[in-house]
Length: 349
Ligand SMILES: NC(=O)C1=CN([C@@H]2O[C@H](COP(=O)(O)OP(=O)(O)OC[C@H]3O[C@@H](n4cnc5c(N)ncnc54)[C@H](OP(=O)(O)O)[C@@H]3O)[C@@H](O)[C@H]2O)C=CC1
Ligand SMILES: CC(=O)N[C@@H](CCC(=O)OP(=O)(O)O)C(=O)O
Image 1 (cartoon, rainbow, N blue to C red):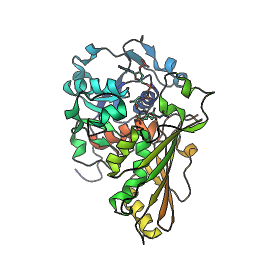
Image 2 (image 1 turned 90 degrees about the horizontal axis):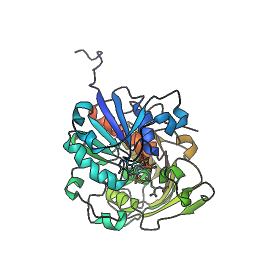
Image 3 (image 1 turned 60 degrees about the vertical axis):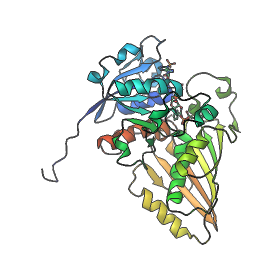
Image 4 (image 1 turned 90 degrees about the vertical axis):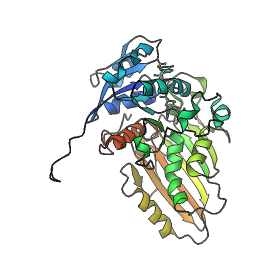
């Protein structure tokens, strides 16, 4: 075949579980426009009636024809004849229980929950409030931070898609860690603000419109702290905040560099790691959640004062922080263009 001939990529069929929720709905939207992955079925929890996607999310009326079905265990029978991939946008414990069944049924699983992210099962009781039932699977589930996953990890069948705050934090800090620019014993301080969709669609007083202003939560004990520390290999102080906007995450990170590191060196490191990564945009001005909400990008910016470095990152929590990253990982696994299905972004209000 000559180089000018385009390679025909084999198409895959996917199902989405948790399609009635916020990140599942983004998966439905992204996959419905994907050139190589066909969405063949979408499921909500078992206790629902079948319902049109446009009834669940009226903004898709006239745009997206799909019925969201209740998930029943019988769906597992012969599932591999109908689908190749399962995207899970479920609560952690539901993912933990279902992922092994879907793997056994022969599907490749991209799990958006935290069920398989931490590689030390002993951390689950402290940070997730339950004991892990499938600890052997943790080692077989590569951590799904798309810009940093390796070719050998992409051979696996279960992917623990990185969390939303950890995606924003780790994309900002990993180049510095990998290049050895952090001061000995440095403890990055990560302050992050999330929009309310980060808490999911279910009703709760703390995330209702009149209650949300701007406030920190989860001091020292948020489950994303060990996830970020696992990725970076160093301790962090991570403080999430809830803000009164719908979607997006902004992280402002303060970290000490080794003595004598110049701006040009820091600039070169970010360029080196991200110049060929289409979903990361390096900005010469601070990011703004308004510019990433509804897009699949992570925007990054940094400024230095002596040994002190401030790095700011912004993502859409439901897209680069969840659904779009899962699709990006599938693109990488199956050899599709990394941005396939992601250029249009998601819903924007
Ligand atoms: N929101 C965010 O910003 C992000 C979320 N995530 C992760 O993605 C996952 C989903 O989050 P989110 O979209 O916010 O959640 P939502 O609460 O909005 O949606 C959860 C979905 O899961 C379904 N579900 C719940 N329990 C079961 C079950 N036992 N079997 C089958 N389906 C079930 C629900 O069905 P029904 O509607 O019928 O109840 C619903 O469709 C979570 O693990 C979360 O941690 C990851 C990154 C970012
Ligand atoms: C605002 C809000 O409540 N955010 C959630 C994190 C979002 C999420 O669902 O977490 P994962 O990325 O790990 O899946 C929280 O703090 O628990």
